[in-house]
Length: 116
Image (tube, rainbow, N blue to C red; front, side):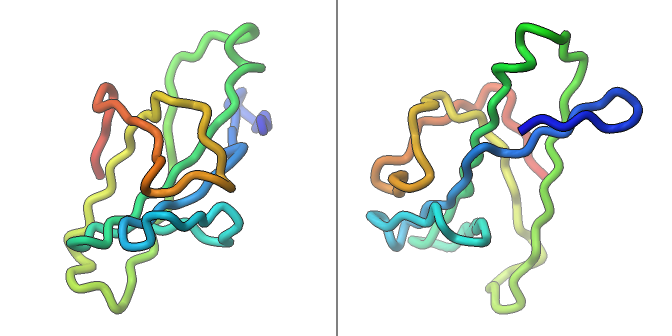
């Protein structure tokens, strides 16, 4: 979904999103109200988001782009202070929020990866 804000910038929200869990490798979380991440040993979780840029690509020149996400630290996390968040591009766009699992997760690329 694309929305124009004042100043000529565009806000684009994900068309679908989900998270996947290593410890629940066959489960789907596409209907969850929240997105989760975790880097615990044997309990990694990843958040997946898909954006639809098809309307933009033929009508505008993209000068720059920013991704803003907010992370709420768990009060029960083992080490909540040293959480590392990585953003990576998913190279296989055929995944769906209602069927994606840890076991069938789409491939990612490190090209353009950023860490916060």
